[in-house]
Every structure is written in C-alpha cells, then in structure tokens.
Amino acid sequence: MSKRKKFYALQMMILLIMCSGKLFANGDVTPHAEWDFILKKYVHEGKVDYNKIISTPADLKRLNDYLTTLGNTEVSILTRDERLAFWINAYNAFTVKLILNHYPLKSIKDIRDPWKQKLWYAANERLSLDDIEHIKLRKELGEPRIHFAIVCASIGCPALYPEAYEKNNIDPLLNRVARLFFTEHRNFHFETSGKTATIYLNRIFKWFKSDFGKDDKQMIEFIIPYLQKQDRDIINVSDAVKIKYLDYDWSLNSK
Image (cartoon, rainbow, N blue to C red):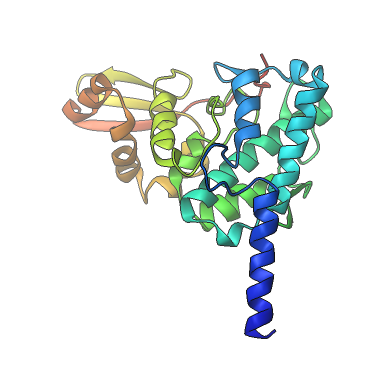
C-alpha cells in the first residue's frame, strides 16, 4: 500500500472511531459512558441486579450497543491507560452479558465453558473471557491490579465497582479497588499466635501467584501498600508470616 493510501486509510479509521463515540475531543462524553451508566444504575455494594436489567429493555439495548462499540474499537491507536481501561471494562461487560444470556442461574459455573467460549467480539477480534484476561490484560499489559478489577460474576470475586474505568481514572481507581479488596474479610484476614501471623488470602493469590511476585515474601510486599494501617502493623511486628488460602464462593453476585 502506498503512503498516500495508508494516510487516507488511517484518516478514515479515525473518522469512523470518532463517529461511533470512542474519541471525544471536548471531553464531555467518555468512551465508556454507557457502561458507566449501567454500573451506576444496577450495581450496589458489588452485587448486580441482573433481573432489573433484563426487565428494562432500553438499558439492555444500551448495554448491547456498548458491546457493539467495543467490537469496533481500534485498540492499536489507544494509549496504554486507554487499553487497560478498555480491556477491564470489556471483561466485566461481557461477563454481565453472559449472565444475562443465561439468567436465572445460581453460578457462572452452571454455564458450559464460560471462560473459554469465543463468544465476544472486541477490538475487531473474536475472543473468549480467558483471552481477555490472560492475553490482553496479564500478558500484554502486565498489570497485577487487574485481579481486583475484573469480576467473574461470583461472590468470591472482587466486588464489581460501580464506575467504568477510563484513561483519566485508571490508576487511582485500580488503587481504590485494591484497597477495598483488602478491607473485606472474605478476601483477607489475619490470625496471630505469638510472633507468628497467618494471612488468609483470596484464592486469586494462589491461582495467579506469579503475577504478584516470585515467592511469598514478594507477594506480601506487594499487598502491604493496600492494607489498612493496623494490618500493616501486624505484619511489621511479626517474626514469621504464613499464607493460607480461603475457599472460593462461586455463587452468583446477584442483588
């Protein structure tokens, strides 16, 4: 392709993206505004009101239109922060849609191969939820805090935060959901015996241990900045710190 043709192709690509609502020079509307609307309206304390979404055709259409936008987005022209926000939102939105497609149900595990089916169209690719998590987020972006942000529609997952990730909030919001994660007893708590502390952690830390460090010591160093002061103090005064993993609750995160 000649340079001239490449130039016009790029210009057309940018025009299409702007017309489909993904780039906004005036900053009045964000690329993930529709998803943000759904989250604010239907997510309460991490629980999703799936039944109410289904019962509101206009908002179900709003969600479907957002998913179409994800499919047409040209990710290669986005910054790292924009891509990170894009793929976190995509994972969560597709998961909510997956549940809606099978609702009512008691667990996402009632669905056949929920993470491996290539059901989703994002960034002009046919993908599975596993593709988004393990390739787009973990391998390509290498951001361990995504484990506090992406939600598998289960009680054992981090709580779904009622706000969309955007390029302008991605770093502080990831820090916020990380701190919130460690305030919940189901994700993290202590037992102490003398100078020994046993940390009980969400099983996410067992499944994705390498994302948080090469050993238990590095994993503890990773979580310390997100802990409340009293919890950090317990670790700091302990001569030994052991790690155990909590059972995972696969019950649906429904309101």
